[in-house]
Image (tube, rainbow, N blue to C red; front, side, top):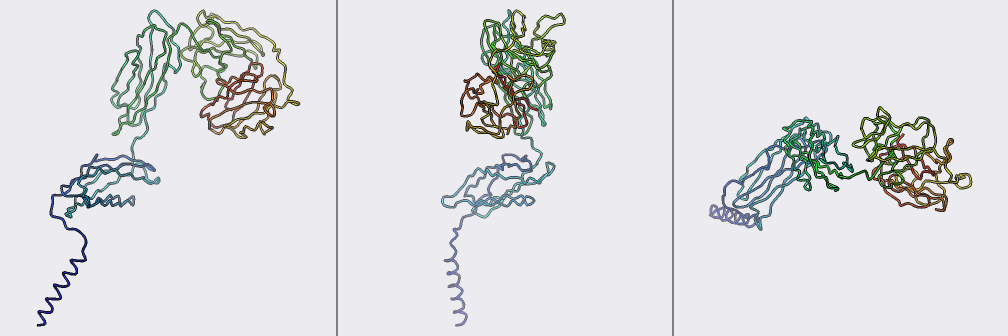
Length: 448
């Protein structure tokens, strides 16, 4: 009798337990499958990396666990059972701590469980010495905005240097309008130099060249630069540079070199102030480089277009009216005395207003940025400005936006009581000397 009661209780207990288990049961099935996107992943300190895999099971997936014990990563993704998930594209990002070293190596473990309870695992090697920087393109010629003179047989010389820590895989130079599509395999060298000359039509047109470099990394990085140039019978722009041939023409915010004042035919006219005797100058056919068109004096003293030319020397300090004909290779430099009225800063103080520098603002009232006259030339108003490293805009004016005022336009041009507020993008932070020449209606902002 006791045995019968005991058996009854066991059956009742089993029935109770069975009723309390709400988890569905699934039949046996084949093992799930993990198809890795790669067996090796590259990352870097303080950088996210992606774990990618294709997860599959004929019955359904239950969960996947992602583990890197050394990096305290233990992530479990649980899949739905209604409806069942038979296929899943895993894409999981993880940020590597910044205190890790590029020499560190780890293993990523994936454990995949299906609804039948089958478990499979795979491991992925994780390295922190990845290359995520695009190749650097430098020493690019022609310079963006260059002019190539029309000739009976017009030539286009293209050269540049491509550099990358993982090596250069290939470079491509293309210009659809000229039928150029030159692909060169670099073979993984860390420094690749390209130099070729192409025959092009003598049509007076503007063209765009695309230069692309692709590196040798597992997941290739690439950089592309666009270069515009024109074929012309003469120059459309000219600039006056009063710095040595080796100077970086991009380091100052604006005004160096100085753009021409007027142009009639092939003759460009500048007005210029030489701040010392024997001032050395060059004429350029482009704003940011001494190449390809740099005009100075040959050994015989005549004007020449040569990137190794000698400077033109203005003998005495003062203002000059200068004309240049880059086709006939002639120039004149004539001293003159300004006739504009000087500004009396004691009765009409002039202030700098704008954005991108300490003391910025557009109130139009007296501020902490008054200008002072150059002791040796009262037409030149100057002061120190500290740029923030952001975009720069500027208006120079008397109190209340009254006359005189100068809005900073492009190329450092400041028409008296006129101009448009141009934006100079991303000027480098630092201390600069700002100068407004009221005679020339030009400004410079030169890094100290």
